[in-house]
Amino acid sequence: MEPKSAAPGLSHHLHGVLTELHRQPYPYVPNPPTCKKRASVALIIRVRPTYDHWPSTNLANNASQSVQQRLDGFFAQPWVQYGEPEVLFIKRASRVGDRWTGHVALPGGKRDPEDVDDKAAAIREASEEIGLDLTTEDTISVGISLSGWSLPAGGPNRTNVIHLRR
Image (tube, rainbow, N blue to C red; front, side, top):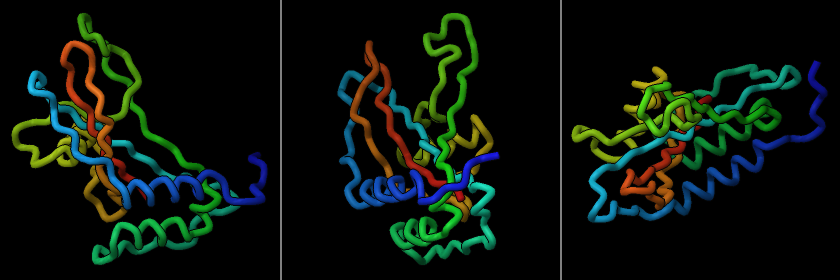
């Protein structure tokens, strides 16, 4: 049996980080001229409720609300305040000759020509790799955070698209 929480845990800090990321997103970082590939990953966070603070109602998601209002409404719920934040990782397939074989990673991949932007690439890749639709009403897309680093030997730049699942 899990011990009872006396005070809110990590969710308070997570709310602050996501709010700050939404208010001050990282600037767009273009690929270097020698790097033609671009990849995006989705950082998918969900909050798992504890048995002592189980959700009693489902918060309706109002599309007319701003991201900040939706974040505030989500984190105002007691089950979220006392919940356990979790990050979704995948394990890459094992293939001979693949330098990333078997690695743990965030879902994502190379941007395709039909992808409008990096966010669209991350959403498509998450759907393809793990079957998770990040365009549903129970998802709050916080924004794009460009890490600004390149892999050795001209590998792709990575874009992190933050999604909060309810």
